[in-house]
Image: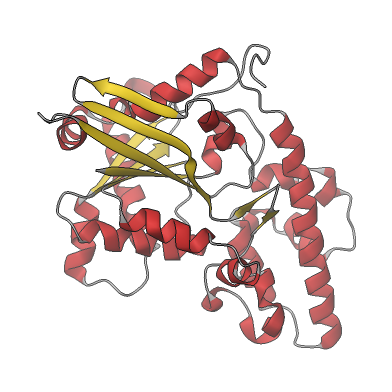
Length: 334
């Protein structure tokens, strides 16, 4: 039995880092640049840029197919990626590890089932741990962030961790894949496929807006490694991700794996602020909303019966306290 985590920017935000695109838009990189047409569009239409990659793909269709316009756009995209990397490096340096938040990280990671509702907690527990014979459960990680925030925590608990008398969680720092690259090796930004940007305009420069092409051009094994992990997974745990269409390939891969086995499941942790009066109706509505968002992000390769099967296998946990790792004490770990 294998568990694969998909970690998005919500993890960095839970650590207190200002790594969202709206945070980047407020930086001097964006605010003080008056010549970059992408920054100009962001400042003029901020509400349209909540999903940067989608908006960038849409902007590419507004560029006339003239050499000057194309070259200007390519230069501006390259500058934005460079500025984004510099901004995130500053944020990454703000992340500190303490004995306290490392222990909290391990608790969240190993006992994540404690943060879902009782019925689904029992389902996960029975499936993973409530067995008579000794078992080990591999935990793998597909990280969509550019920072090393998650991997730094993971390095501190590289071990087999007992869950009960018969079960151990196997945590290996080597079982991690940075599907969108990293600040250290170069970030990979853009859309999921050619239908999401102006492929005709960019031609051989499409790698700037197409993450799959960029991965291939750089000769990485990111895609192959992620697919390998997904195809051996029984339980997917998604944290801190927007479930957007620019990662459609990965939602399709997960959905295909889920329908291949009746026991496979998806757990989605959805951040939701404190609700006045603990209104369960709001939580139920949010759960339906998240399930539909996942479904809407899939391609057209699934039948209506398969879609319904996928929907029934999604477990949504609306929490505001999962992976709350904001450092409040000085760093004690290098």
